[in-house]
Image (cartoon, rainbow, N blue to C red):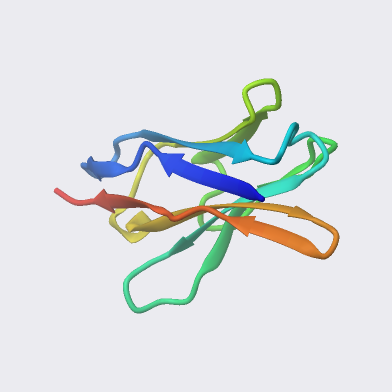
Length: 117
């Protein structure tokens, strides 16, 4: 089995920055073959895809975060990152790490990000 653990969430003022991390552990030896992504779910809202990175490195972002968020991965450390800059109150959500291969997916427990003045 694979376990994903997010960290780095917290309370930040509008315009501030946070860096989220997701560390893979368990039976996984490498994350290099996985497509990985960050999702978020705000209060009373559906879970939405924020950013993704393919095993080959191609990245995609939701329109709402383009130019502000950057997804990256360190395969040697088995870690996925989300650098979040210029944070807005509407970014407030629980952020979830996701890893996928064909027919299998794994999720972290989520980390809370609150953007408030």
